[in-house]
Image (cartoon, rainbow, N blue to C red):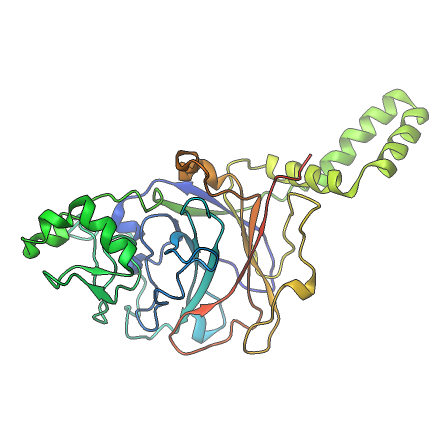
Length: 344
């Protein structure tokens, strides 16, 4: 990711990738699967990763690797976004930030290799180097354990029950093979790497003006007056939605727009937050936009299979403007959900 202050817009696209590319040692930006935790210390626990609306465990949606050049304490930095996919709620959202210096207890000082590791096995790692155990279902911190085998860990009673029904009942008698028989619980979203590209510098406003000038030249001053009149009567909501469509038309497959401190592109004139709606960081600093998640991501999540499913227009993630350093733990940030129900 680019340095803060430069403010380019970088676009994220979902692409398939081998499993080893999506593990924490590779510092991936990714969608779905289990989170590739950055630091093992201070992981958010079950209470922090519960939906604030229905109380059920949240699903990992995506993470964005976003280091801050020039900040030794944020040489590694990642934002983790979780959402509720439990019917009929499908509404809760929570986001966390973690950052580490280059020299730390979890990773090599040198960059990771771009080549596949010698062991390219697909087995899921459910224990961090710190010794912390992860839930067999969601990959989040698992403080609960199976009372029979004491080798299967869970974040919640809900996930223990789910795992029991879908395989652990049989596997419990063979605890030595637990890591090799983790079933697909359908709780996780499909997994993709987020590949970043800088947005094309062609500005849609320029394209629009060029198009209008060609029309006006061919049809005279009367049309120019008519277009001006139409623009005055066009509602603010219409203009916002049209600007959104024009902007994403340049790269319609984008699932994410990244740029610390840039202005989001809203999809609707409704439910746009005011400054007072974005809470300050506990350190006292303001929060600024870090990235926004686009509605195109829903196409990759197969969300329509869920009945009353997750849905959004955009998700705008705001983080501490100072990216305050709070040890090696995970700091909760703020996410604003704007729906598309009121768009024209």
